[in-house]
Each structure stands twice: as C-alpha cells, then as structure tokens.
Image 1 (cartoon, one colour):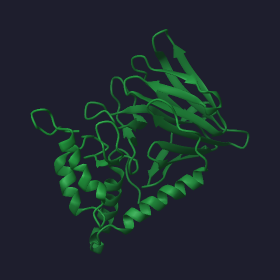
Image 2 (cartoon, helix red, strand yellow; image 1 turned 45 degrees about the vertical axis):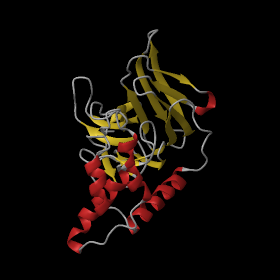
Image 3 (tube, one colour; image 1 turned 30 degrees about the vertical axis):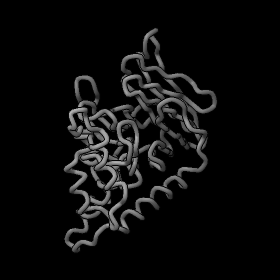
Image 4 (spheres, helix red, strand yellow; image 1 turned 90 degrees about the horizontal axis):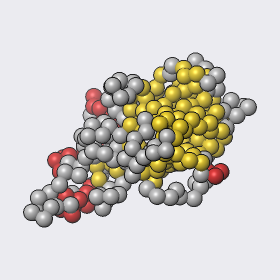
Amino acid sequence: MLFDLHTVPFSRFGSYFAFSMLPERPDREAGLYLRLVRGGDNDIGAVFRIELLASGQAVPFACFASPTLLRLEAEEGTAEWCIPEPDFIRVRTQGVGLRLTCAPGAYDYAFPLGERGWEFNSFVRERRFLLSPAAGSIREDVRWDGVKAQRLAFDGVPGGDGKLELTLEEYRTVPRPPRPGSFDQGLAQVRGEYAAWRSRMPAVAAVWTEAEELAAYITWSCVVQADGYLPRPAMYMSKNWMTNIWAGTTASMRWRLPRPIPIWLGTSLRCFLTGRTKAGCCRIL
C-alpha cells in the first residue's frame, strides 16, 4: 500500500516524527519536511526541509510512502527512510546526496559532537537532534550571529561508492549511546512490529480491504509514546493536524483497533483525568 504524503504523514507507532509534503507559506518553501508533532495545533512542527542533491545541486524527486518505508526517487538516484525506533531514524541513499535545512528559531544553534556527528538544539521545541554519519560524511552550513544560528543546513555527502547512510535521533538533553545495527535490520524490525499489528486487526469484507489497510496504518502510526504531560502512550487525533489527544477519538478507537484491545488504549483515557485542572476539568492534551 502506498499513500500520499500531502494527506497522510509517514510515521510509526510511538513516534513524534512525521514526514509530510507541506505547501508554500510566506515563511516556508513548499516541499518534503521532517516534522516533530509535539507542538499542538498551533505548530505544524516542521524541523527539516528535505532535498536530494546531485553534484551539490537540488534535484526533483518523487515520493513513494508505505507503512514502514519512505522511498524518494530521482533520475540520479534514490533515498530510503525508515523509523526503527520512535525516536530514531535511518536513511540511506544511492547515487544522490541529501540536504536537511532548518529555519532556525530564537536561540537555536548547532555544534559538532565529536565522532557522533552534529547536534542541533531547537530552543523553541526544547528538543535536540543528533545527525550521525554511518557511511559517507556530513558537510555543515551553520552561520552564527552571536545569539542564534541564522542558517542551519546539513549536506549528506556519499562516499566514493556513491552510498550515504545517516541516522537522526531526537532527545531532550543528552543522546543515548550509539545504536548498533544497519538500515536493513532497522527496516526488518519496524516491518515486524507493523505486521504484528496488522495480524490482529478485525476482519472486514473484501470490498473494504483497501480502506482497512489505510485505517490500520493510520491508527498504528498515530500513537505517541509517553512523554511530558502524557504519562502513558496515547493516540493523536492525527499527525497531520489536530495533533492532540482527544477523548472522543480515544473512545471511538476501541471499535477499530486490534483484538484484544491494547492495554495502553484503556490507560490513555486516564491521561485526561491525570491532567485535570484544579477545577476538575479535563484538559485537551
């Protein structure tokens, strides 16, 4: 199954990462973006604009998104993305380079983190991102004005064999130790997790198969892990917009999720009770 990134983001169970095609705005170019859906409805969460490079220049590409793999195809080569863990992304390219460009906010900056690569500190989001090379190298364009970075861009440069492999992780203060494994191992891991989810989905009539496939992916990918105000895993209304936890969404999902009903779905309703105001009102999280 393939889906359109203009309407359905590429993400995974537990992750705040989402890849989307975003339209042009006065402060943003149109294109493919890696987003972090932690900011609620007021922030689309665009962190990096993604471009493919040939001879240092951006080239057009087509997107092919499936539940566990995002493939970008240009005439000059390809790039593949997977999210093996909720906070960890792998990307590999053949024949093309990769550019990640950020529109810096107040006090945002980046600096080299030894052999680990480059760390980008997003003050507005209170998150840090570590971009690490597994094959090839990273060429940075970081322009500091004394208060914040005026420009933040990172080019992934393929090695002599034309191959590039990078990892990207998000965290609040310090990164985890380097994670072992390869792109293929990470892809196999997330495919196994998604297959287990699909195998437990309720059966539907053949006429609804296509709709069931999309519904299975959307429900799986809209879950975020416990963090911040969320003491337990919970399901977003969407990772496109309305990126919050809504009681109606959580309740209605009981009829659409795998059998037996996941434990986290019942406990996610308790998020509203845990987050009540002093007046006893439930928050929209």
